[in-house]
Each structure stands twice: as C-alpha cells, then as structure tokens.
Length: 572
Image 1: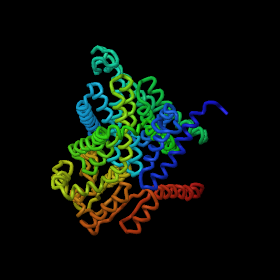
Image 2 (image 1 turned 180 degrees about the horizontal axis):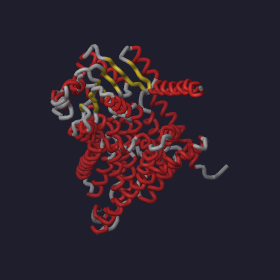
Image 3 (image 1 turned 90 degrees about the vertical axis):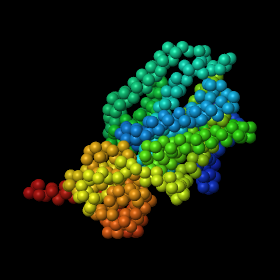
C-alpha cells in the first residue's frame, strides 16, 4: 500500500458523505447541495474526526468550476451575451458598486480600516455562477431570456472580479492602514502600469479566443470525432476545457473559470457541441459536488455562535441588499417583474470569487480572519437558501401584483416597446399570427412567415431584441406573454393563430387560457421538448403540439422515402 493516499481519502470521504447527506437533504425536500455543504463541514478542520486535505479539495473543486463554466459556454454563445449587454453590463457594474458600498459602510461601523472595508464589500458583491447554473438548470430556465440575463449579468461580474484580483496586490499599499502588514506603498505610476498590463492581457486572451480559438477548437473536435472513438472524444472535450482554462490563467492571468467559459463558447461553433456537453456532464456533476464540499470545509461553525449579529448583517446584505438593488435596476430598464425577481434571486448568494478574494485579502494583510469567516458563513447560508429564494419568485410576484397598485402600474407602465405603433397597418392587426418567443425556433418561423407574406406580431421579453426587430421592419411588442396586456397589445383578440415557440408547458398553458378567453376561435400551435409534456398538452386539447424529435424524424423519413421513390424513376 502507498504511504500517501490523501487524494484518495479526500475523494472517498467527500463523495461518501456527500451522498449520505445529499440523500437526507432530498428526503427533507431540500436541495442536495445543502447536504454537500454539510459533508464539507464534517470533514473540515473545524469539526472533530477525520480531516480531509483542504488544499487538494480546493484544487478538485477548481476543476469542477472549470467544467461547469465550460458547459455554460457550450450553451451560451457570444450572440446570447451581446443580446443582453444593455442590461447585463450596466446592471452588474451598478449592483457591484451598491453591494460594495453596503459592505464598506457596515465594516466601517465595526471599526475596520479602508482596505478591510473595500475587500469585505467586494466579497459580498459578486454571486456564484456555479450556484446560479445549478438553480437555472434545475428549473429548466437556463435558455430563457431570464436565464440569459442572469448568466450574462454574472459573467460581467466575473470579468470585473478578474480585474479586481489582479489589481488588488498593487493597490494593497494604498489601502493598508498605517502599521498594517500589507504590501508597501505603490506609486500611482506603477498602479496605472499594472492596470494597462492587466487590460492588455485580458484583451489579448479574448481576441485570441475569438480569432484563433473560434476556428481551431471546432476543427480539433471534428478531427477527433472522425476517429470514431468515444474515449478520445471525451478526452478531447475535457482536455480543451481544462487546458484552455489553465493556459489562460498562466499566460494571461485570467481566472480558470473565465478561461473555461470562453473555451466552451468557442466550441459551440462546432456541430458536435451538444455531444460535447453530454460527454462532459458526468464529470461536471461529480466535480461540482467536490466544489460544494470544499466550501463546507472552509466554514468554521463557531462564527455562528461567536458573531451572530454580524453574520445576520452579512446575510442581509447578500440576500436582501443585493436582491433589492438588482430588482430595482431590472425594473429601471423596463423589464417585467418576473425578470427582475429572477435576476434578484440569482444574485442572492456569493461563491467562488468571494472565497478567492477573501483569501487574497487575508494574505495581503488587508482583511482580518474574522472577515473571511463571515464571508464563508454568509456564503454557506446564502447558497443553502438560494433554491428556496427561487421557489418563492412566482408567489412573491403574484402577492406583489395583487396588493400593490404601484407594482401593477409598473407592469403596465408606458413603454414605447410595449405596444404597437399607431402607424401599424390594419392587415397586421386582423387575422394575423401572434408569435410568442423569438429564439431559435421562433426566428425560423418568422422567416417563413415573412417569405410567404403572412402577417404576424412577435411578443418577446427581450427589449433589446424587440428594438432590433422593429428596426428591421418586424412588428413586435415587448413583455411577458403571461400578462394579458402583452397579448392584448399583440391584438390576439383579432388574430387567426397563436404560435407559442417557447418550450415551457406551464407558461404555455397560461398563455393559451388568456388567448382563448380573449379570442375563443383562435387556432393554437405549441412547442414541446419532451414526449410526456406533449402528451399532456394534447390530452388537454390546448392546440396542435409539435415535438422537436418527432418533427426531426418526420423530416428525415420524408427525405429517405423520397430518395427511395426517386431511385427507380432515375434508373428508368
């Protein structure tokens, strides 16, 4: 037997206890990740008994972050990110500023210095992309407009934190209090030099991935796929995810997570991107468990008893302050209340960047160890509660709209994109098609309708997309079609057909109810992404239901039969 088996012991203990506590959490109707966090506490240095190797667990968790962010990149294209840039970029920057100021003000009241206050505030300002992805995937809304805005928002936060992590050592001397053990003072010239070098490195990495990676990575995947070896294909996917992430960190000082995210985005250009996502899924799930276990290992339970008031304030900033700021910003950008609440729930937690930043702050002598413990405790509580926060979005929305006249007015507020222009031709307002959703499916339907000169109106939540559609001459209204006002503005009462191009059966049912109430004779066409949902929709006679796989099989069968039928005629 080998003498050093710390890696094996750490993995065995982490997976074993995570499975046990995860099952208990699931039985108690709680998310399994709560069990994973508890498993980490059990094998951490703050509890008696077996203590796993914290360093090894952290590195294994980093691999999990890489694979998870790689998977996000496979599903989230650059076009998706640009589609939400108008809200994601300013929203993330303003929200970071608000949360940082709240943290700084709180730390100052506790008597902490400027450096500690800044680091502490920044730690509370950035949410965990890993936690968000798990929440969005569990609810099937990762690809929705709300999911795209939330992910885009957090990607911008990650980019900001990359810059902060690089600049903090240079700024440590200026932020440190007299007599602190922080780095010595740094001249303003050196600081601006560091800023310039950092921006140049990040820009170089992005350009390299967009120009070279976009061409090379899909070709590499295709070359491996041609061998017919599943093992080589899986190895290629993992090697690209981890290799690009490691190379980005070493060569460009970009975080592992950001490097893997861009690798996934570039791999999306390949026709094998779906298969790549499926092949990496088991590894992503396994290492994600290690990520949550490693977070639990860093947590010291004594902080709950030792500093209960401070911990309560930290949790309030994370789960209330950030959420309120994000909801307000989303509403300010004229997005529906449902979108605003989804973004707010997405930000009601902190994660991996907070841990890294807190550790760096302690190492530089800026943040006291008490601050790091509070950050970890706040992360543990907010991560554990995040699923519950998502679960109450719809009830809270209904409660607010039912009791608040102001909220109802905001949902119906004057918005130039929320109603069709007065100059809209009458032909578009009578006997038209109301198309809900302008994603990959909706876009193709719209192209065919335009080609055959069939009048239609698009109902879409993404205001930027609606603005773009109007610029292209497409009649569109902005808003959530679950609200009767949106369908009314699309003139569904006089429409000939309602086409729901979003794959959400729950939302589709509500839209059909609204449409048939306003127009009992309307023809309804729905989309479904699995056979069970399609069967239920057909049983309820909601309309004609199309299933993606079924239509693909029909198209392929028609092509095959056409080829066979054409063969004898060609031979004759």
